[in-house]
Length: 337
Image (cartoon, rainbow, N blue to C red; front, top):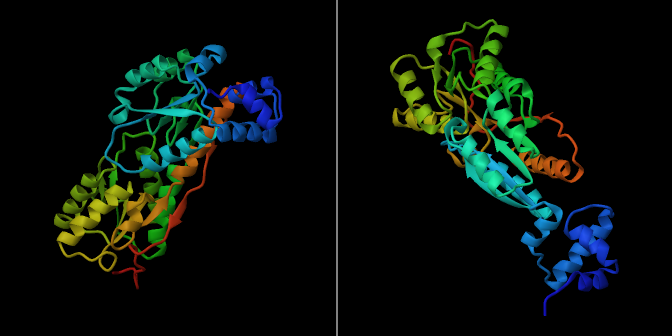
């Protein structure tokens, strides 16, 4: 026999109207009541008809996630954070790839419209004005994670990439390094590339160190970008330390260093950026700038759900980074090394 809201109301000792409001996430009840109703529903094995509910409430309890299709490894923790919070609030998620630099963003947005999502989370894709117009016409609450939009028109949650790269470069300088390379950064990427490049450059200038363009190897934040950079350094000019645009890039640097028997950190210090799982799996474990990806995903999803429920604006937030000290940076004994 099918379980009904009357059965749940009896078990939870509330009215059927209250059960209906909780199950359909309409509001008008306290947190204790919500927990009691949901617990009763779970104990009775109740499953609501999502299609029928969406017709009544005009909500599908679905969140769309749009990420680019790139060869870096940090998206997993962001998506896990989103999914965990979505599950807690009774939402499901749809994940789609928009291609490198969001080239298929319009197709991804069309998919979200067709699936009638209640909110959209866009990860690590810089949005220009025309794309913002496209999103605004959808009338769906949207938040950006680890990215921004032109003129900061859409709400976002991210770290300060400029300050993080400045801090990483300063850490190497404090360890007496003066010949510091920068590997894997894309100067045309306004989200992460441009601010990280400026953070590196400004830190050198602030410490009265020369800016040597021969020590900057541009790339796309990938493992291969790190390998190409290190090949260049080996055959042209090897710095004493390299700050990398990502952990993937740092591992590419370390892999080529190993091929040429260049010891890390004995002969070359390396700092990554992101603190993905590979940072502590590598040998030696990677010193890196840690972005709180899981927390970023969880916070973003929670704020989006609150905006959906209360029809309130989402406030942007800069969240703190950390420098995780591990085993790939060496203190030089003197500045002439």
